[in-house]
Amino acid sequence: MLEKMGEPRKRAAGYADVLAAPDHVVAEIVAGDLYTTPRRAGAHAKAASTLGMDLGSPFQRGRGGPGGWWILDEPELHLGGDILVPDLAGWRRERLPSIPDAAYFELAPDWICEVVSPSTEQLDRARKLPGYAREQVAHAWLVDPQQRTLEVYRLRDGQWVLLVTHAGDGRVRAEPFDAVELLLGDLWLEGG
Image 1 (cartoon, rainbow, N blue to C red):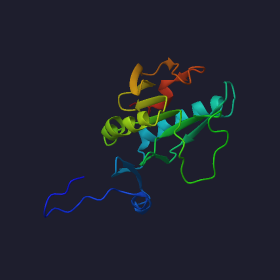
Image 2 (cartoon, one colour):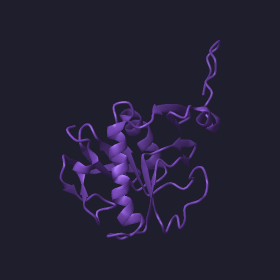
Image 3 (tube, rainbow, N blue to C red):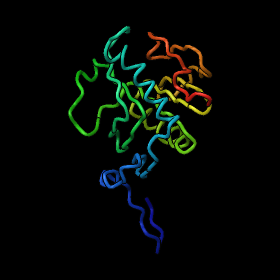
Image 4 (tube, helix red, strand yellow):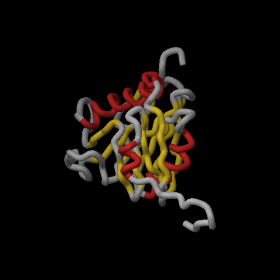
């Protein structure tokens, strides 16, 4: 980074900045910049929590589904200098045989889900998704509770490819969890 005469040099954010953030925000570092966002609002929390339950039972616990995954809520990921906190992340058990007893993960997940809101959408789409691609996360979902959509992406040759956008309240199958059917309407607030 070049400095101009008489201007202060910008300091890259570090883990100490994340730890110093207030408890009521999610602190992340993307490309050296610290981002803080408020904790989940109702629509955001319902979508993420419901997805975690709907995927956790068949894929993590193996109840009525294939098993073989760890599905975690808001894990802290330390990936290539970035500190990211997706709403949900999943690792195939063949890559992560057991969950480490640590404050954060250094192994990139196989799948991430970001629940977007007006305050986080630009960060999620323009800053975090490229970081996940750089780290070879194979699948990404973007859920928008206000628009009632689920966008399903697959990484191909280092680029995100939008496979499908599901909308509304119907039943859907979405990779990499297409072995089970999800009811989109369960993700949204009633009357929203």
